Image (cartoon, rainbow, N blue to C red; front, side, top):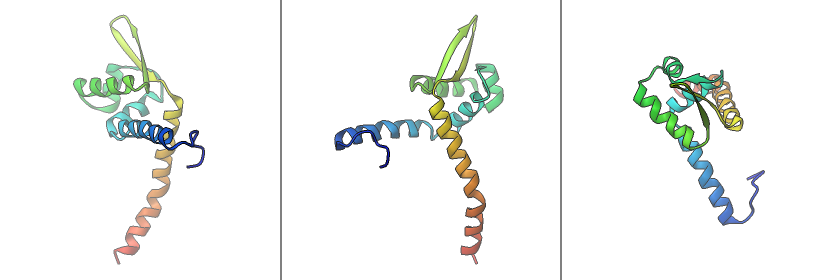
Length: 117
């Protein structure tokens, strides 16, 4: 792969294993919704609940996973906890993927129509 920093197979395998763990974390639509909401600025749990339309236990579980993986950071202000994105590179990857999905949609629909005839 172009740009891979390790040439030794065991190092490359370890790197790809780590990358796959992050991609697995990002494979949950709810986590992508949370990250998308946080792209617009820091939010407390109540604001996130309203933005992503889920339950308190569900969002807490997802925020905990994102926090433990280092993808979001948190800070306490009184009794409230505020969350923000912690890794702009991950945010850029998510934005790039969403851009690619949007760009592929019309082409995919045209292809589906042509093969169904």
